[in-house]
Length: 254
Image (cartoon, rainbow, N blue to C red; front, side, top):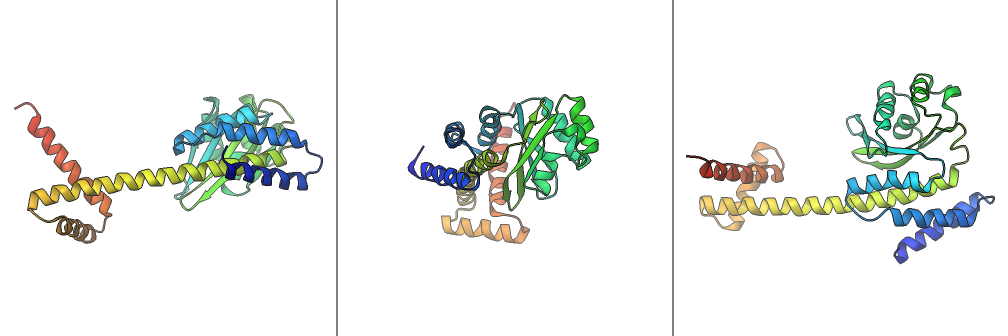
């Protein structure tokens, strides 16, 4: 764990202890350390999978975990479930517009339902969950991005789970959000590198095809992008793909 991460953890634990004086300080510090070790740096898919796996490892009452992502168009998607059971449970919440995971990603940032069978907020979904053996649930908002929102879903077969969930849940959400932000930076950097490489390939193709300098070839691509009103990256990708297809046809059976 680097110095910045260690300092952030110390600050966060101290803040939580100030708002919850009865909490076990050593337990919270231990959970923070285990969580940081679990959330190893990686791409976004890896990070989301590690978050759900770490939830089951670190959070004492969580038996299963998944992440619900709401995209800009309102579409809801389940990501990185720790058990196949969760595909149907998450889908039921998405379709019914009801349940802790739906509430956390759409409306309330922190939702607990220690006894689903008697919870009046989610009568239709509760019937589905109880039939599948799930008795308690919790959900925590993890991120609010310009194009998506995400919430962590936690499931238990035990009535009464997640009743005392405050500071540890906030710690988990805080650490997970940091990991997601880091993974998103990696994703954006990788995407920028791929875009730069593709445009460079397209410039080279145009230079060769039309005997232009690199500046004039790039200007040609820019004008084509503006004329067609599509991103330069997509114009470049079309040119690269077209050349690849021509090469495949030329090397095919004659």
